[in-house]
Length: 171
Image (cartoon, rainbow, N blue to C red; front, side, top):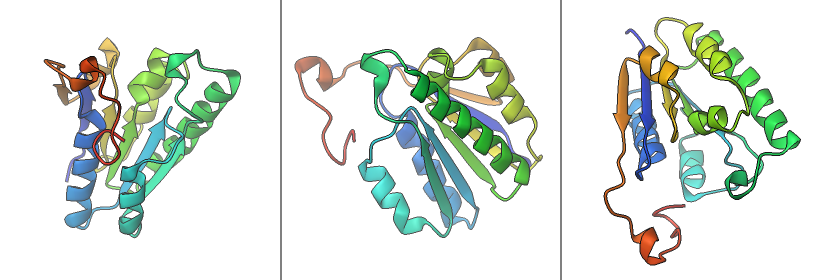
């Protein structure tokens, strides 16, 4: 089966959720899945749930904490760079059928690694490997390279009324 490049972007809720739903679907079909989460470093409900599928889904985090409210530090950049190096090797191994690069768009946006590095990592994959890249601010070059692009648009969100992230729903 040929692998395609999918990009989930936009300012709306649901990019990571869609990618993780695809991971569960792929695992249910017997495919091997790797999820590399950039920027995110704190545990969440989805990481707890995915541990129950660890025979088919491998998840690694390449972030320290949510620096989005500040600026990325040298340690944030180092973590993302090391993660991209590991992900590149994982993709090239061909051992996984689906590779999700969660928040890689954010990593590019905040210059944790370059769009050239991301596109090179994706382009040098075995033909059967499906790639999903998530996060706001998808670079125009990534969009041009992708086979499928979905933009989540925020029409209305209760966060604007002061509702904070709730366990099991947003985190």
